[in-house]
Image 1 (cartoon, rainbow over the protein chains, first blue to last red):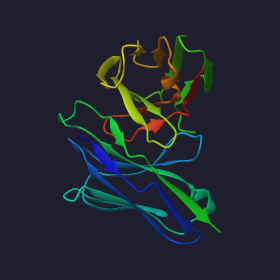
Image 2 (tube, rainbow over the protein chains, first blue to last red; image 1 turned 90 degrees about the horizontal axis):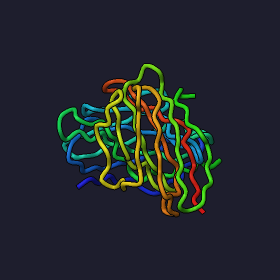
Image 3 (cartoon, rainbow over the protein chains, first blue to last red; image 1 turned 90 degrees about the vertical axis):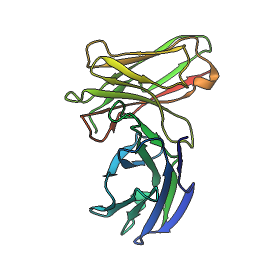
Image 4 (cartoon, rainbow over the protein chains, first blue to last red; image 1 turned 45 degrees about the vertical axis):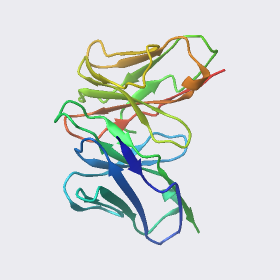
Length: 114
Length: 112
């Protein structure tokens, strides 16, 4: 089956660091993506991991462990505008290239407080 | 602005009516996807095109749903005989080979 788990809600303080975890079990794996989605808007791409390790991009970093089926998104120096839903998605590719669909988790709603 | 556009942005229709949505992907992207998202959930995959070929369709998609991408550029998603359960945000995304997907602003459908 396909299962992607992430916490439903998190709260953090402006200027702090927050880590959003994601665990997955999918029939295939060809990369893990993190998207940010503000209320009423489309998801916007944040990061992509296909190999184990940490990818850093400014205030955002994402980590992947394929053996553990685990990823996290790290947000540093939090700003009020970071209040949004953060979606973890796995590119499911069980047939080795036949599909590129993303399987999404339900999203983690992050509230940044002053 | 990701470059993917969708029309209309909002659609209110009565149950039983047919609706059609349009998606214009980023011009150099040959891959196009349709997703559906309801409140509090992540996007759910509906269908996928590579150029004009529809390569995958979700088993969750009933026969009332059909999608086309006739010339490998824009795509349309039609829902026939709409039901209240079809109310959702319909998202289109496009990508280049092996790259991340870029989403359009979505079409919010309300079936009354």
